[in-house]
Image (cartoon, rainbow, N blue to C red):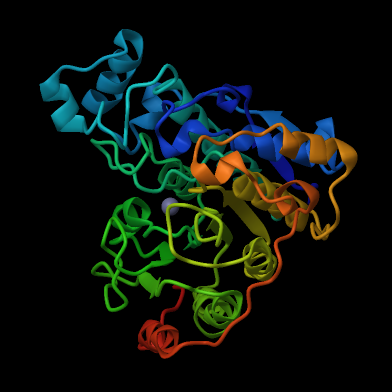
Length: 375
Ligand SMILES: [Zn+2]
């Protein structure tokens, strides 16, 4: 039996920060929850408080020594230089912070619960905005990610008997950790849209990771029309040909124009349209978050993703209560000192249409060379 979309969250993200100077100093999941509630989109019956993944569950992908090192680093709130070097901990990108083990383990717990819920039903949608940590590797932290929740969620789906999963990564950065994990597993098709020439500098258009992975690197200035073009001419046809039983969407919001960490220029409506289109690819959908470093952009975007999953148009004026949530946010970056009024008084960005440039057409042509199909 089909059930209404479920939202898995946790209060561990509220007030948790990677440190005052880190891009993840800002609230994200808590804002998505607060905004969704303030809009009347998130009744208690569909909200699930996330469990935390156990060390045994994490070990399905991560090495026991890394899990242990992260656990000890959280308790001690420090790492020795050798441990820091080996696991990429205590550096600028993956700093020591109070919830550095429990927070990512909770994001994995959400993904595992989502996978189990989806595996036992013929249809359904689960949203876990915390679970987009796509860069983490089996034995080291990478790119703000400590444990790889998308990988562990997909592994749980496969372990439950699902045979074809299509993973679509809309984050501004290449979904390298997920691509690498499933490069040689023909049960999983990974498709990543990301800014070319940006960290981690992998995911070139011709790179299929030794298998059927698809990469769609896009130029700075990437606009809404180009996103729609990618969807219509590459992502949807590739996805349909694969005949996935479950679609996993990574909705990093750092490809939005007002995000400080990329030079892509989408409006949040382009991401919502993508989610709406991808919903048609399979009866079961796991939607996770990802990057997003402007607190207003990410909160408005992710609340809108949740509305979209519920068949609600998010392009409506915020309620007074939702506007209060937005006005209460602060941001230490320069743009946060004098935020434009529309960050408080709208949920939908103004659309950002534009020409479809040759670079985008080339990437689509490369992705569509040779067919990809489900078994
Ligand atoms: Zn990103």
